[in-house]
Length: 219
Image (cartoon, rainbow, N blue to C red; front, side, top):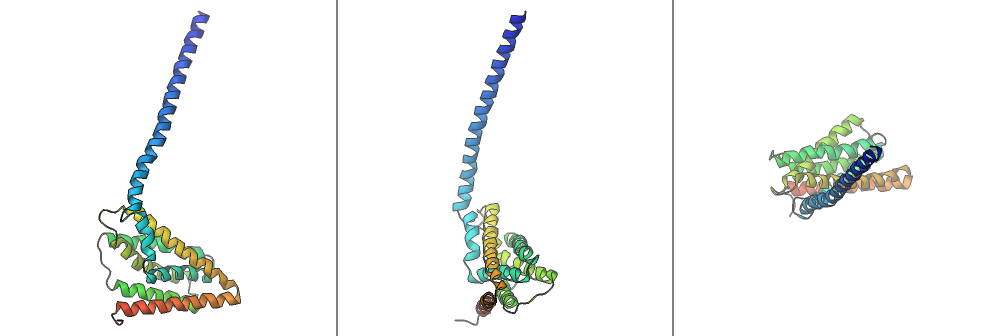
């Protein structure tokens, strides 16, 4: 009886081991197969219009957008903590709301004028070392974020991949903010202050140029 029981236990152990091995093999195959399906879907979104790459590139295709994004980082760096991280984080988040408005087709009147004005105001804030209360700075960049986000959503094709596209322009915007923050850290030195404030002046001038375009006063 003892030997029979041992033999049965051994047989059961072997069967259990085989089952575990089969499940392990199936799991490994699944891990190899599922990413392939996911990547095939992601690759279509990345390479196609309205995918991740389209989202990454869209914020950098207009100089008026680029300078405003950099200005947000610059201004945050000048204001210091906690604005140095609140403004660059809040802007892309609020911008997604503006993009949503664009996706669902809710128009914002005179949006090009608003975008150009954002460059003028943000550049002026940097150039003049303006230090309003944090809540005012937050509300101001939130308004501008909606204006800048709307064209991103409006540019999404009907066949695009919204999540990938949104991730792309949020990451791209965040990198532009980071560039502004890093440049703004020069404000710690007297020579750096000249560079930072001079950059703010250039940003404001770029905003003025695009404002003239928006109102039709350029050739």
